[in-house]
Image (cartoon, rainbow, N blue to C red):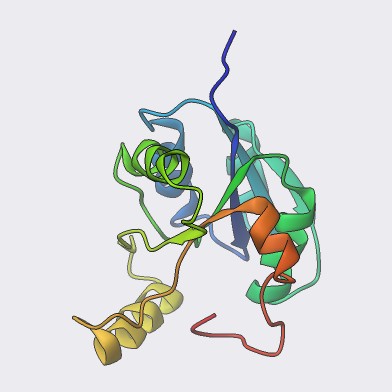
Length: 165
């Protein structure tokens, strides 16, 4: 019996077939195993959903931009913790385990900034790399790993913001 807290990983997608396989593989190869994957897909016209199904993701279709999709995923999450990543991100194999250990060690920690690495050369991967060039070496990066109850109490993400959320 696994008594480790469940982590919900929420991934908004739209025509992400070029990167989603690497992203989902990096989640399935985590050293921490108590994970559910939630894909909130903006009606992709490519193989995004088919690839996500291969990894056992819970898939929801929603006509929504990234921030609204994250909030929808937060409402569907069942985990004690929730991690929001983009479909072109690749996680290091122990980042979720490290986040859970840190959260479990101190109840005052509500969110954690995790290292980000985009894969591929898609338009959005290049946009994110460009965005990061503005704040490289600063503390501006956003948190991606949260206690779900705190994220819900905070009302999730501001849906008026479509970048740097």
